Image (cartoon, rainbow, N blue to C red; front, top):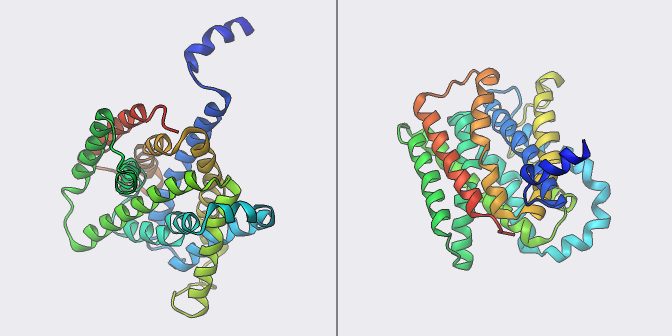
Length: 307
């Protein structure tokens, strides 16, 4: 058995070290959680909980989980710098979540996944060009064109001011996530430090909004059973598990490669939405998702070697 394993290992994992292999495993887990995020965010529309209630769950659970680790990471957070920490807090915290929920209320789970996770490679490339003047390679440019073409196919038939506004909110959420992706890499924060920088400011912000009455709440009007899907998905899987696995994957694989691999989320979310939400994408949406996936494959290839 050991001889066979040694013979086939170069074929199965031709150039992966232990760190890269763990990075790919972490990113695989992240993709599944992101697909669940798209479904859960879509479910927030019409839920018994108000947006503020879901947002509080999303930030308070990781705050309680990670708060004991704060003293040991204060030095790391200081070294990361105020600018990087602010971008991380906005890019994956309350502002990002508000944009995603606003977009989900007017679209579908497939749109949430495709227009947020599916366009992150475009957002990362745009931000790298604006900040550093970096231009993608010829293959990378082709990948971005395909992703944008898939997005155009998906949103082209859309009409109505509310739906168009939802699409715009999702694209802004993608830009936030792209900025978060790059800031995590620059900051040097480990997964726990990253989770603290996201959850603590969001918890304080939503607490202030609730205390001042600026954010309406349905607290006391919903049951634990109604809140449980959001506790499990938004509170634990997305805000605890995925934050850790994504930060770990970025450290092992690089931001561009993680952004490309994460774009596999739209197809998975669209498939999961069929039994969970009874959302059946039409033929045009499936074609758009396929085009995005082709762009994702090319983007992942173009980003090889990007650290």
